[in-house]
Length: 134
Image (cartoon, rainbow, N blue to C red):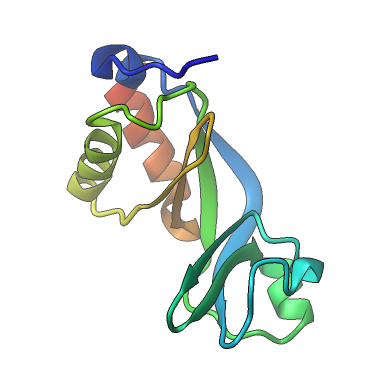
């Protein structure tokens, strides 16, 4: 099933969903994909400096891991194409105007936006406004 590419349809249909759980970004030197699966990562990226894992905050705290910032996850519930142009820019620009940083991860079906936990409710309202919801 192909994702949507039309920017107007994408923005109108983002239908943001705020997840309850808090997440943190942790980095691990000399690790590879599959390492630290006990932390239950929802996202990962391998950089030259180390393996970055996005994990539930409770797991980081349980293992006494260092992190900077606590985030909430907003899933844009529209199936966007990985080749769609403009959705990430529209979302990040709208959040930036509200003073909210956005860490956006594109997966196969949806885009996922990590925002500071203390700004999650404002971020939701901002994205609902972008979509034209009241």
